View 1: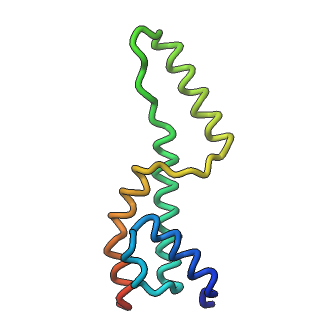
View 2: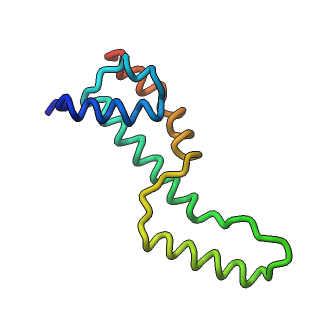
View 3: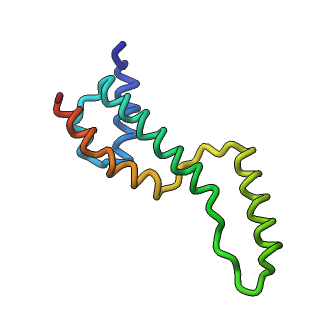
Length: 108
């Protein structure tokens, strides 16, 4: 099933925010959509792992209280089921998949 004009515009707009103006020359087709879905899955997986990284401990704070607070925060974040992606994750996945997007955009 091919993408409607509105879906193509939405996809192009989303990818423009990630890859910039070069997406204007890319065909917005099922292959590009599939790659975008993979990009989002990889970024989500990375972001889920980033949620588990403890934040820096402020000087002078009790380590046991700090760890307890961090674990509680991590659990609450998972319960909320945050949909945001860390910029670091999006950037890493973006560059890791750039070649795939370029190949599909060129019809290969």
